[in-house]
Length: 566
Image (tube, rainbow, N blue to C red; front, side, top):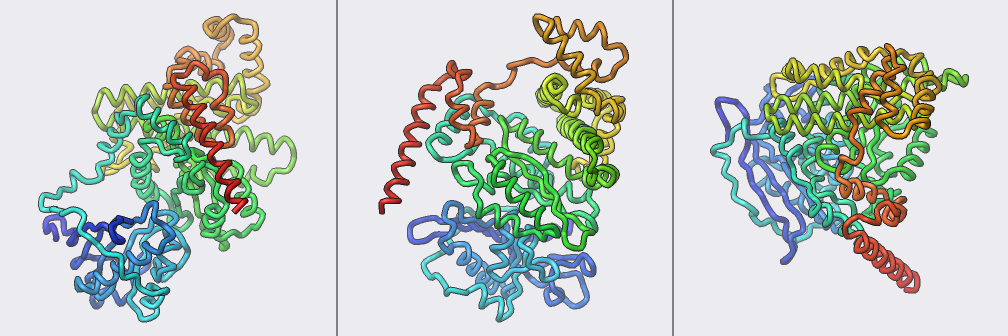
């Protein structure tokens, strides 16, 4: 099927259930493309044999649009599904040509079945993988034989006659859905029970946020220099077992997908992920390829408290990706190899300060820009309150953290909010309706500069402004009195001015307590400690949660004992 006005080949689309006997073991959606074009030359993905002459017109190809054997992996169904796709390619006039867009963690599987990536590479990474029907590749695909009992049954008739790009993949609409997505106590209650009964950390909103981030990651990649950086999006849950503990085999497989120039860097990452990757963990890491010229940047994303806050924290991680292109080259070369104590302190506090302050301002700018672009007053209000509450909370770092003002972003974030509300967000968007991450970077970083925090101020904040505030807090009865005293002495000090304002706006205990509780339970290392913490004694259903957890642990122990005995 084609749309002549758009000159886009949507293909003939089919949806199937993969059935073994009377059991549905997976799903597969495919499209048969007969008028598809693709670039040639340096950006060429497919082999020359797929093109018609010297044109950019491809010969007919079958594309796997969706493919999965969820909860039935390890039984050979995936390979058999690919065999069926190859056979369908023959039946539909595609001569056995098949392509698929591999998601994170699936690249190695497709390559194991005879697929390759651009330039015939087998690197285990996500992206387009194609199957060229050579005798050798077909032998690889059918290695181990053909499983006759798996059948494809039409799952749902598809009518794309009224298909409109305006109704497809609208990022603003998807954003609004996430902000307005209900996640009430009833849903959280069910999620907590599932977690404590051994079904894993599976917040109800997970797939919605995950799908949105996957689409946004492709947009982000367009703002990176392709000759220097390749960005990959990974989710912490993909490196964990059902209990939330790091899975050493998954971590090893993940790390093996990258080429390390430094074995110590590889071992350090291996240890870090093994020890610190609870299922809602979010952080960014960089891997350098052997040629030293191009870097693989990997963002780990997770799910924290609720849909909107999860998106905010994950966009914060994407900010670090942009920083690797612009911010780090200027700072890292000066500080990364510092050996003396002072230089190390500068690196740890100043570099982290600008990095984290900017990442928060970047995430706040993204959320506000999307909200304002939606034109929905309710969404704008929800987002502004969340961003304000999150940012003002970070002002507590001046009191509690040895990093002092290194996480205090309110001075930048308040400027972000004011600018976007007053001047609109169009300047931060591309013509296709998606955020321009390069412009978002420059915009949010300009607000960091307007804060007036010099490197020396960040370095001295713990001992100067931090010490002053800690003393005032100790000498005053409550927060209001503390703020009043800070206002008396703040003068034109930007750190104290931002701190006093942030503290006056921050509303303790304004969040959903049950969501926070569930999010903390996600970390299996602290799960029992969190569950039996006295501060939660008055939480609704807490006795039921504790009894369920205890019963599940006894059941697990009994199963382990029986396994050892057998």
